[in-house]
Length: 324
Image (tube, rainbow, N blue to C red):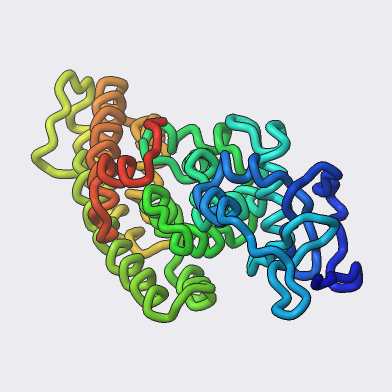
């Protein structure tokens, strides 16, 4: 009978070693003794793999690797990822819907649920990601208080790499939209560090750079509609003054188009403050606010296509993402 010494692998330090477990998973010399039936219930790949009868140990041919009477399955994942994944299966509170979780946990669960075909866990992980980069404008406006994954420095690359690795597309428009708010000189160096295949990296870079330019043009066209000379502002209480202000603001917007925060971007993020900041009369302030809000909806609906992606409904259906 082949023997596996304790020096070859050690039990996990994270309490994932059940005395009544029926299979031992080994990664990076760390072992997890778990239940084949529980894994099979969650993961299609484990269901097929662990359901195959193992050959009996044979002194001459070696046969299956066994430790303490349990078959040993050696895997190519990281011990950290597998720890998070198994905890999410065994401990309901560890990765609970609607409860904040850290990015490394969500990423590990998404990677392994994708690899081992655990649809319920994959869906839950995607729903976590979508609170950070949602698919509706209403959810986007509330993301700072509703996101279940706390923000962290340079998260753009981490999210893009994870989305690419696990074939999740619904979060990409929001990711690109957020990155497009930053100077291109800050984003390009980050794109060069993406830990993905070179060909895919090139696609991501080109999609983002071209999409950023398209977004810039579409936002100027729609968000700044209120600066067009043909724009109607019924009920204006100071026509001469408001017209003069809007004309001078149009020139200001042109000058600020290449600044770190272009004027149209500021207007998009602060629709309710634009009229007041310009000292327009109340009716004109309300008209401008409504115009910008309508324009934001138009831009948001076009957002995926600007970055070469399918429309929102197709993306959400593809990733089986619930509407926020």
